[in-house]
Image: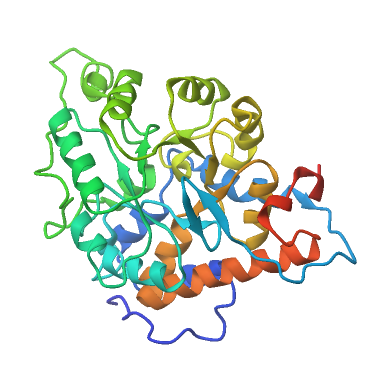
Length: 365
């Protein structure tokens, strides 16, 4: 049976972002679904990202005044209406014919910041120049050829992107058995259009390690981060920080922000949940730079818990892509609005009318 067409109205049984999953499955091929849902190995970390939030309990506070409350925040000199941002997701034309254009439209409607992937199927210029472009950050996969990376940085700066997000936890792809079992291959009509061409995968000589002598031969290191800091005129944010030692090193180097993330469980299995790593990272950072959290957000209460434990904002990935697959820009906008309204309810019932009032004391730890 061929996949169904995207929804044109939101059905009444979609009342939470998780409700989009079944609708998305009906509209995606087996290979696209495997790519979206896959995690590394046995997918323990994928599940842990979700389970860990349910183990953190809210305290709840009564008789507090929430009149005049709001969800606004300021990051890197810009004001955002709420702290729920769209994480970078590659190859979005796998999920909707308009790909990142559709996501950007849904983000704009809900005043949501979108982080565009290097591996976008729509050029970074086209997304930025759209009549209804949302606030944008550019996610950079550092390339072996620094001239290619530098060109991406310059293009993002020229098009008004507000920050660079360097993904640092995926020097090589994880062992994604679900993708392997589905025989995933990128369809021939799709490509990473921001790059001049798909670079060949480094190979090892016979008898050498495919990992150490091949894939890792051109992997980026801390010196590459120093180079980006010297070249970029935008805030530089590292995405994929889980260890406090790495967070401290990054702060001492002069990065401008960190994203605590395990890549949605897609790279290294049996890492802790992102929300579990957040408090130790926040403790060592000690306010030196803003911290965001990526991974496992499915409810407004999850957003609240992340902010209570030290995040300034959160990113969502699979939920908005499922909404994109199910209902295009309408789905993206509805999913983000749903999360924002849930966050407002939790804030009101916890006695925290503004984001800066949310503290760990509002959790039952």
